[in-house]
Amino acid sequence: MNPGRLSILLRRLALAVTLSTLASGVEPNQLTPEEQRNGWILLFNGHDLTGWRSFGKPEAPKAGWSAENGWLHHAAKGGGGDLITTQTFTNFDLVFDWRIAPGGNSGLKYFIDERRGAPIGHEYQLIDDAAHPDAKVGPKRQTAALYDALPPVGAPVRPAGETNTSRIRIRGPEVEHWLNGVRVLGYTVGSPELAAAKAASKFKDEAKWGTVFATPLLLQDHGDAVWFQNLKLRVLGP
Image 1 (cartoon, rainbow, N blue to C red):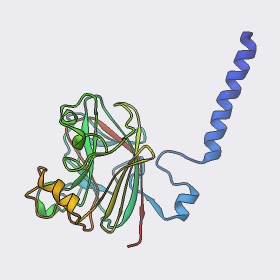
Image 2 (tube, rainbow, N blue to C red):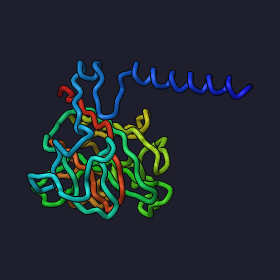
Image 3 (cartoon, rainbow, N blue to C red):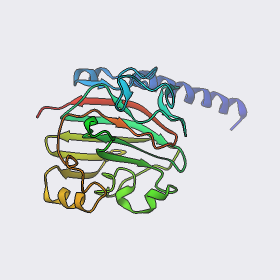
């Protein structure tokens, strides 16, 4: 193929990609008209920390967390502590994009009670499965696990540095973890299975671990770099 012909084809391809993006109407940290009709809300506006605050404090942290190029970013060793939503939720469907730095560790927690004084809750693990030492302990500490309690099954995790899409769905006592379009974990709060998992975990002495209640959502500061985008939530009926 001659250079002129190749150049024309490349320009046409670039235009097609641009038009496809515009036609879809999908921009980072925006809701589509269909999502709006179905009751989805944005938890991160892409510009600042509106809707978020530090764990145990009324205001957002001054360091560590920031809006960076459309991502909610925690800088490695940046401090700031755990970040939680100003709203609480009970039954909900949550989807979010995230990526972790090589060797990094973080998590998204729910069933959080600040009266405990520590950010203890059910954690959807976000980690570099290939490089972080905690992931080497076993599947219960790998991406999409209910941290230290239940492992994911068949999790199609993408490597550190690449974007993954996760989903947490809670309706009554039923909880699901999804990763990149695949349901990888489901459990029932109050079930013998979860009670046994708790008894074998580091949470065995935590009285409220394994109970359902209205909760903020928490992004973990584990000292590593992590990025979040397109945090979307839909409240579900009981």
